Structures are given as C-alpha cells and as structure tokens.
Image (cartoon, rainbow, N blue to C red; front, top):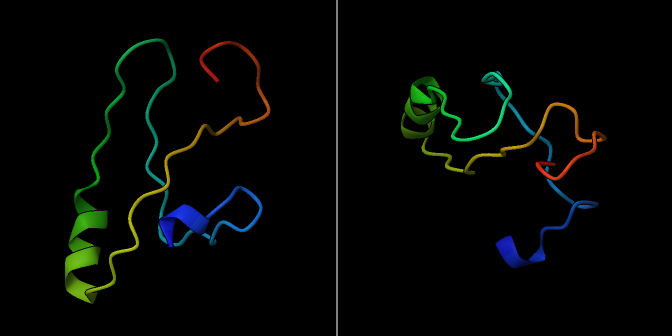
Length: 61
C-alpha cells in the first residue's frame, strides 16, 4: 500500500497533532501517547510528518 499512496490520495489523519518549534537543524517531539494508542487499539497506521505551513517557501520546505 505504501507505494500506492500519493499526495492526492493520502488517507486522512486521526488523533491529536503533536508540534515542535520551527528552525534549522534537528527537531524532536514526544509521541508516547500516539504509540500507546497504536498498541492499545492494535491499529498501526504509522505517522504523518509534515510542515504546518506547507505552502511556504525556502530550501527547508
């Protein structure tokens, strides 16, 4: 399935978003609650990581 997902047919997201500050370099955030939900429900659909401002510019986009 992962090879068939494109920007236009991507599945919707669920759950509460986790955020981290912007800037150059390494970013990290706590995903403990999401991982616990995966184990408790048995539904592992992975993670979606994206920029909150996807229409922005610059080389880091």
